[in-house]
Length: 212
Ligand code: AMP
Image (tube, rainbow, N blue to C red; front, side, top):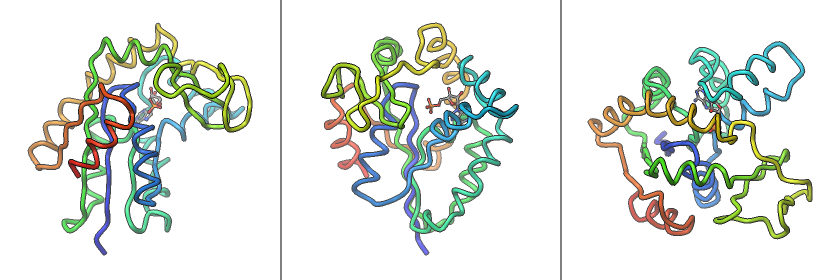
């Protein structure tokens, strides 16, 4: 059966997660967010949890083998029988090649590259706020109704450890070291769709809908 896949690519803070959620509402496809999965594991009081925490808090990438083991079940789960939306995966050429192999020729695959400048990324991540319940906000673009309080569960919002300024630069470096071969391959395969990420959330969503 033909499946539908959306792959969100772009620097940290480009709005991949937000746009993935907007598409999820429209398409009724599950989102696979490796960042969300890893942040949950990072809270576990186990050796594995502590290992993941150290990697995330340094802005480096979790090794490909661990990522592949974590996502294998989700990708082949019943929930993804019509397709899936990928947020934050693939991050390396090894992950990209492993993902591409899973698709059948008849599947519809859209790789959405949300393009945002470095300067804007630095600015955006500093203003990002999160809640332990999973909700995310941005003080300028998507503010909570009450100052720094979660709309969903009324907890005090926090700055993710990896959104702290010293980690942001490391995350950007890691991103640039890995993204180009992935973009090149998707372009060669005619699957890459470039989106201007420096617009309002609604306008980015609109551009995505117009281009897919
Ligand atoms: P994100 O929320 O997507 O920005 O991910 C937060 C952090 O989780 C990243 O800075 C990485 O340390 C880690 N991470 C998320 N997805 C991946 C992935 N596909 N491969 C390796 N590390 C990842």
